[in-house]
Amino acid sequence: MVEKAGIDRYEIFGWDYEQINPLTLKEINWYLTWARKTGGPVLELACGTGRLLCQLAKRDLKCVGVDLSPAMLSMAQANKKRLPVEVRENISFRKANILSLSLKRKYSTIIIADNSLSVLHDREQQKACLENARNHLVNGGLLLISVSNQGLKDDKKAMSWSKPLRNPIDGKTVIRTVVINNDPLKHVKHGEYKYKVIDSRGIARNYRFPFSNPSTSLSDYLTIFREIGFKPKVYGDFNLRKSVEKSKVLCFAACKI
Ligand SMILES: C[S@@+](CC[C@H](N)C(=O)[O-])C[C@H]1O[C@@H](n2cnc3c(N)ncnc32)[C@H](O)[C@@H]1O
Figure 1 (cartoon, protein in one colour):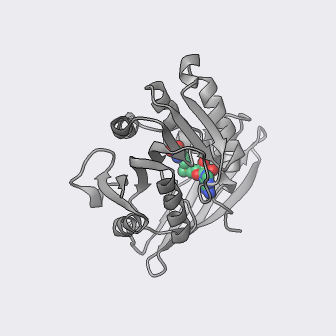
Figure 2: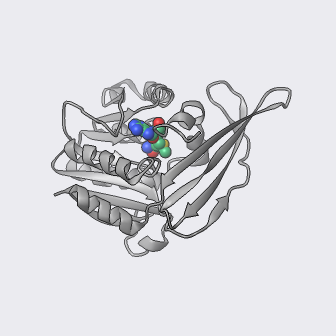
């Protein structure tokens, strides 16, 4: 089975990426610097556990996060509760599908962070998400995006099993691995996440999450942004302009046109 709406894995194992791929200060500062140029309010699409918005809220930005996964939203609410009371007022979360978004207000800054655009299933979903972002931005507003720089190489990547991770919700030990195949002819990357949940007797229960996502190169992104009505600036790895092609992460700061 291929993941529906991209949230099946997040419903059970969404807590893991904070451990596997923790937010860096560089990343927070990149978003913060841009968000301060337009000011709040900030909307994050597919906000996950709200980890980035909690950091922006601490620095006085008013923030709203939306996500489709109830499990991710409940972790976001828990992260919010850990903030000082006066900071909590700066932030709220709600359940919404970023493919069919209809919020009452518009935002000065919209964020799609840490590969949330590339977990969507096809180019049409990516465009629907960007159109919704455009419709919810004020004139002069900014869209900020970070995604892995995948390129379109014909390759297969198999990660080794992770170190043991601790599920913060039930305390169980979990290990995971992922296999990614890039199919340059079809512009698709597909593969599978595998998880083992190990109980106190050492017995493992296995979970598998096949996925299929568009394999989107830098030039594909630039084309899509222009088609939807954004003028993007592109950065690599949260700060550099010059070595964008070689960067592991592409960062886009796009104005509405
Ligand atoms: C890679 S995680 C993003 C994490 C978050 N942006 C961050 O930087 O920590 C992807 C998130 O996308 C959410 N998601 C996937 N499809 C979605 C959809 N159609 N609408 C809303 N959220 C969605 C998942 O539930 C998950 O929380």
